[in-house]
Length: 194
Image (cartoon, rainbow, N blue to C red; front, side, top):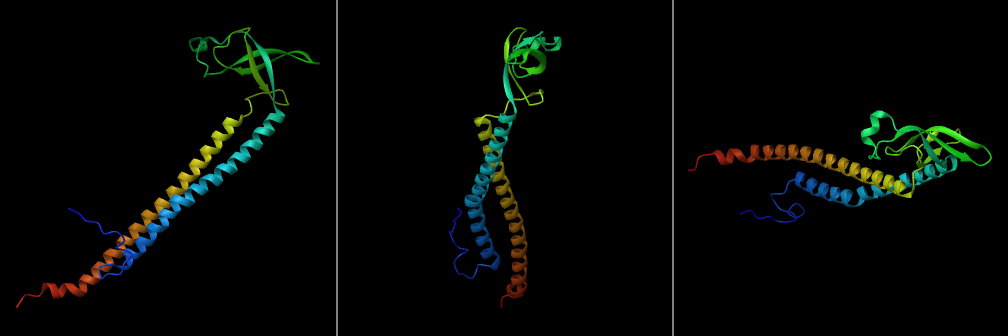
């Protein structure tokens, strides 16, 4: 049966070594870094990423415009098996009417499964190139949460790697202290009893 004595590294006793005190303080610092600093790093990185992503989305919304177009032509033959799969977009020619400019056609990426004559929403930039739609609020928040979680995990990883290095160094020092102590007391233990 194993008995644990809590806080023995903090109390004065003859068995406590300097490396034990260093390890106790290191554990306290690691606990504070993991429970306070790493989450704060994640929150700060997430908020910064949210601000940047929101500004980028606003700039893209100002530059891009959505048109409701009709697909001209059918999907390529190689995509005929994927008609019902909307995850694989393909390029198709689309047509729409723009006020003051008349009927326009362009090549755009449309979801697989869209057939000729079906309406589709496509986005164009100021130069008339087909572009993806600007990110919505959900995408901005997903980006911010992902960046924040990654930053917090990165900070925690750095802390844990630093703690592992500190423990290795502390173990080396502890073994050296025990060797020095044994060098002083070992000869007395090895003497024959009289």
